[in-house]
Length: 306
Image 1 (tube, helix red, strand yellow):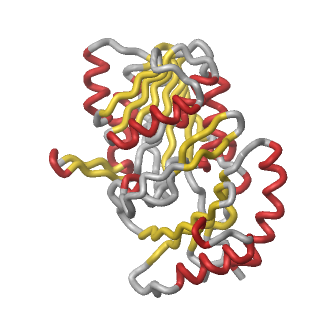
Image 2 (cartoon, one colour):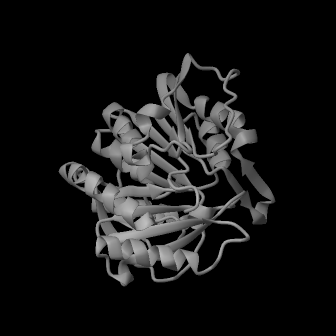
Image 3 (cartoon, one colour):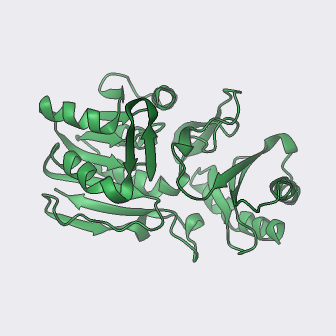
């Protein structure tokens, strides 16, 4: 069932994405209730993630990998199997599962990004936000852009290519910041004017406020949960997003725009007390066709006008 569904979907999507020079796209996401998995295509590589539970049989994921690889004629060495556990997952995007340090270049329109399908649960590129990245690019010309929780810097690369005057990218992970710089070099984006900062977001926001830093455009796409053990510090988007957005909005110039997104499945927005002109949910415009699902929204997204 899975192999048949994936093969049909691949045939449907491959040509249209090839025309757009998009090499990373989703082929399956828990479309069949009994098959709890996501299958992503990475230009000849397959990343297959199983949504595991306590009762999940360990042989099930390799069986799915074998069936999908056979259907799409992908060699076994290009099949990457991941477990995605339900519930609060602290820092899943940084969770290390191997130490190959191997990266592969993938194209998304006229940009390129390094992905690593070997070492982490996440590969370095969230392709469900490729439409949102395009929106940011189209708005970026001449603007000072802030990218919080920047991960590997794909939003910043799009903004820089869109003619941003400056980009500032912030992430707590040293690995992510180094990766973001590699992505900028890959796209011939200069270091000057494109600042990368390894810092905890709230620390950065306090410091930026003290230093009177201001911005015209911001992207805020935090994890649902995170903890910092050495600081006894935690972040829960359901509880903490009003504080986060309030501190970010305080750095924005008049008529600035903030894109805020979350993949928390039960998220309830509380934005009534923000000092803003308008807020509009734009989720339907930001989810690409390969991520449209009857079962769930891969993310939600709001455009906040300051």
